[in-house]
Image (cartoon, rainbow, N blue to C red):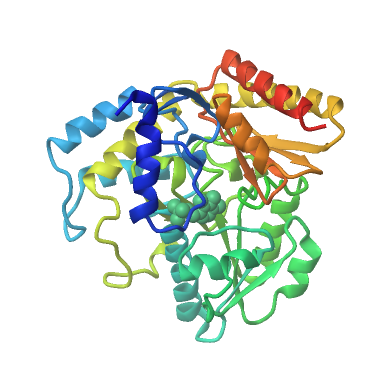
Length: 401
Ligand SMILES: *Cc1c(COP(=O)(O)O)cnc(C)c1O
């Protein structure tokens, strides 16, 4: 088979056996290094999607690869019936650098949110008796694809045809305190929000919103659950997005960027709260296994040691400023918003075709909610790489007017 046919052959085989849950692009990545991805025919791409905000340290970060190789040759997995040193170390690191005192490990963002919702309801049940089970979440939110996840999510498109959903969720406008306040009742046990809505279109609430939400929770004895699955692990320029809001949650969920691409999820909570999930109340076979948590330790240590957060803030500010310049050039760009390296370009036109064109020109980007181009590149991206992306984007925009 000739080299240029390798990708096509994989695409045809994909069509035969893979469930059609994704409308996949005709791209077959086989190797990655830093911000670059290479397809089965050797073509190079600049990756500003990073596995959807997963590869925060770029593809195959050497320290994580080394930790994985060593751990794979030593102990891949053992049961949570035992004490797992890598899991303990990763939990210690997370607690040392956050509000949290206890960590539950699982394998994905949706599972982390499941754990958060279970903990919130268990705490409410043990503290207030049955009946106080409602969780307020936001319209346009995204919390994962399990039944709990789609029930919590404030977008109809993920729910269609899957009824009956998990009861006990109400969805209110994001970034507005009054509707949230009006929705609190004696049934409410928690408020669950993303610090910045990722899938929902890179929506950033007004300054001071989270202080008001925290205050509302405190007034009514509600738990504040922050879904930092996408915003956590350095994405917004601080290790966790909540740090920039001057508040702390009661529960936080992490996943995407936590182990550089090895599947992992984590639910973090205060000591007092976590006490409500006792032995036998929750679990996961793979959750926090030695392999995944070894990758998590190397990822977190790199994020903390290697000026990655500095780079994220500097490059994020640069990228956003340059995108604002493009906004001044193209009237169909209606907004540019972001923090650190989670950036959205809202347009008055559809972005789907732009994503395809960018791919043919060696640039991987994403479009969410139809008209928002989403950029979530590795946090180690260089100025030269951002310039390369901007050049391609400028070209594509100029062809779209
Ligand atoms: C991606 C995402 C999830 C779901 O994570 P999975 O690992 O796909 O289950 C949940 N919440 C937010 C905010 C996300 O961005």
